[in-house]
Image (cartoon, rainbow, N blue to C red; front, top):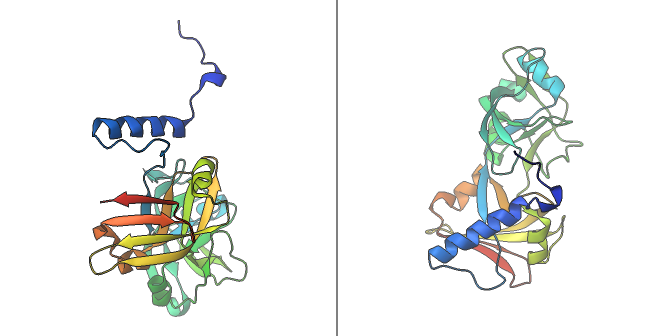
Length: 239
């Protein structure tokens, strides 16, 4: 007979991941120093994408339509949807197939790199996600209709997701800033002013846009390092 698990005995997923990581490192002869349980640093290029409200999903894809998950993202609960939209800027400049990310939000937002914004003829400011007051808008076109956004087009500011335990290890808090050092052949770059987004569940992951990823040749990077300004506390990933 299967008995219900005692909720007090449920092991935190982050704890399980760290235990598994230590076991694997030990088996590979790469066991970390005592007390060093910092997770591997993941640096992801966040390509142009769109966030939508439920209302705008229905306008663009038909009444009752819901986003269809196609690929899970690194952060639990988030996904790239099968659905795409066309973004139309001033003078009918357009990007034809821009991916929608889910789940839906309480506001619609378009995140572009600088070159995307120039291509569309939109003067998109650098903003943190959700800070869309006073930003330019655009037109989104789907198979069932179109949505004209009065605001919501931004160049997403670089940032790092982490959980509260990671933040404590780095000596930072939600809303602080950190630096990212990327070493690549002839393209090494130091990115400053990464906003720390710390909560109870996030995994350690840096988001930069496509222009930034190309500038540092991230695909060929041999070393990435997350550093708190003025402190030796750091997390690195060696290629």
